[in-house]
Every structure is written in C-alpha cells, then in structure tokens.
Image 1 (cartoon, one colour):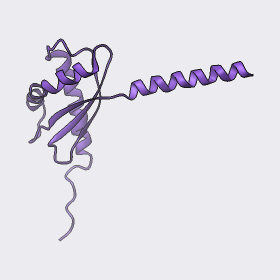
Image 2 (cartoon, helix red, strand yellow):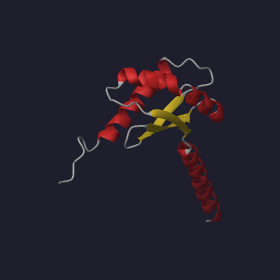
Image 3 (cartoon, helix red, strand yellow):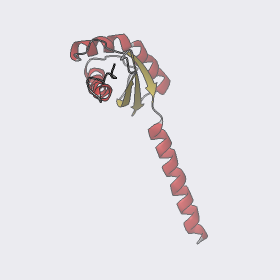
Image 4 (cartoon, one colour):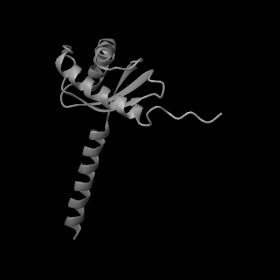
Length: 123
C-alpha cells in the first residue's frame, strides 16, 4: 500500500497564520480584561493533530506574568471566538507564552553598543 500524502502540505502553517491574525483581532476588539495591555502575537505553533496551539506574545505595556495569566484564563473565550471564525473541524486548545525574543534582542544590541564604545575608546 503506498504512503498517503498529506492533503495540503503547508496546512498547519496556514492554520497557525490564520489563528495568529484572528487572535490579534479578538484580543484587540473583544477581550475586555484590564490586565491585558498592548499585546502583539509574535508566533503560533500548532501541533500536527490541531489539538493544541502555543501562542507566543510580547507586550508593549503591562506586567508579563499578569498578562500571561489573564490570557490563559481567557483562552476558552478566545477559542470560542476562533471556532466561529475558522472553518476547521478541531479548534486547538490555546496556551499563551510570553516571548522574550525582543528583550533578548535589545540586550544584545546594548552589549554590542557597549563593546563598540569601549573599543573606540581604546583606539
């Protein structure tokens, strides 16, 4: 029996991209929790069976821990909103994680600037 090919090779990426766009809109327009500040969805990773999705977000203002807690508490509400927008059989359970990439990038830029400044003083 030949191997069965996936229906659409990049379907998981397309679903993750659509979840990212829809969640951005849902959080901005429909989520009324005051603990959630200015959130940016950085990435979405969906498991192959579409049962779970890790949502990585960053914050412009607000407390990381408080916002993570608020988003995870609102995950059911947001999942329900996704269910109404997405046309897939299984809408994944949402797990929100704070993305530290922008913080690390700022720290690295500061270290590079510091190294360049000390190097120019030496010369």
